[in-house]
Image (cartoon, rainbow, N blue to C red; front, side, top):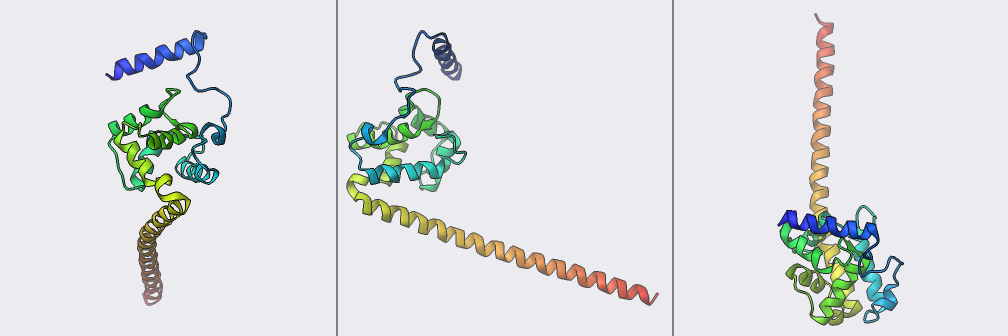
Length: 188
């Protein structure tokens, strides 16, 4: 299965390089999300863009497998490796095994039409169902996610503070021991 997938990609890349086929059904020009996805308001698109940029940690304009995995885990919907690959494959129009911002918006457009086959993508689209919740609902959704993250961050902060306190105690004990040895050497 992996060999046939790799062979198909190699063949497609060779066809693109030779010029016998275009690079996909996506134009190489920069796209305008407001004209290409008129079903979304400007605020909705900005919200999707913010979410995309949040998980595009290497700032290359794509969500790769690891970034998608991280995003799904943070949203509370962890997926298997195969599930993640299926998610990418469903919206990956240019066959680069990554999700571009345009393809990310396509997830929500397909979800609105009920065309998503992947359960993981349906869960992702449902986490920010702008049609149902509206922009205010999306705001409360993101606020609740921020609150959850800050609660976990608070626990992490407390653990770090305890570790720092223990480290200081160890350093003070080592200093007292060194001072004691220095004073003890004066009596010998």
